[in-house]
Length: 472
Image (cartoon, rainbow, N blue to C red):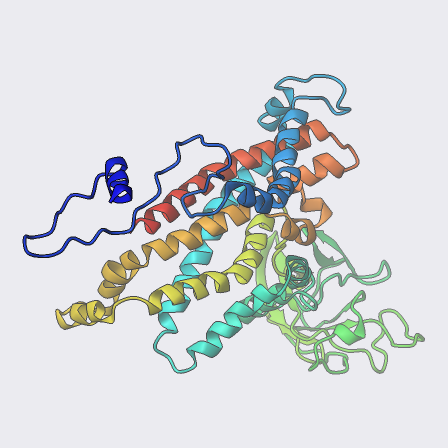
């Protein structure tokens, strides 16, 4: 009794919150919470992890992040305010050079072209490939072929396209195709660099043409010998030359290659084995006006009408113009578009795969409903497919924009030395300024800071988009 009374005096029984008639059962008592600041208790984060343990796990990553990312950025900004030697403070002179030096200004302009053109074209091609291959049976094989260049390094791709864009049609695929198409519609001259010798009855007529030293008469057989054409490059259907027979009231003649393989031939004489200049054009000129023309046959024989009597015979320059060798893809004018083409070849497959994955997740009932309502395929694509793929297209576009701001390998490998200034971009200029023959680390650091400032807005937009998607 005493003990119970003592206990009851010290501690009041719990209030009865139960309904009348039911016995009251006291529950387990919780220990009082320790005050906030009580020593001996470790604080936990919202996930229940001790902060000390989390800091220990994060420390190596933070050290690497600081050493490999933060420190180089801070030091580059610091170094950009100093001169070439790094001993004298240059202020904003290096940044001023970015917008006054002609070479760097060209790099900035080319970077702008890259950022606008390369991601847009790659994304557009990826979208087209993904949509068009969605319904065909061999679409997977096509996607595999388009994506294969992603397995090739930038270095290897640069070497490949340096050969593709080679100016010689026998080596460069691009020029081989271009020359083939050109020659289909406009045949090249058969005898480039052909010319007469001083002992021949022809002389230079101006503009690359050749004329006879004297006028010709009706009933006369004229000889028009030339040299300077390798027998191996003669037309395959050329026949051995023969002397033209005289015809009354007409002018006849022979145009042939006055060269005997192995030597021993005589000038101005049609020797055995010498070939006729098949297809060469011969014009009769009086008072600067062409009065007649003829084309030599396979044996080099040609015939002019009586109207050519008393005229000079001329071999026009069209017979001797240089053969069409295609386009200078890596010349100053086309070098940047050519390199962008190689980049699109590599990255269109990347865009296609991401867009195809997004396309596979579209609700098909919406597309079918639009078709049932009478929309054609173009309307479905433009008004439903593209708007629903907008987040995926934004991911691809932003990723490629960040990538092209740092483009270096393709420009370094593909552009020849004579066109590197015209193909220059910021990353390549950063390499040239920092490690070239005239190294200036101050300007190189300023270019690095400029590249960072150009990338930051794109990254900010990308991060905002990712957070927005995460809140949905």
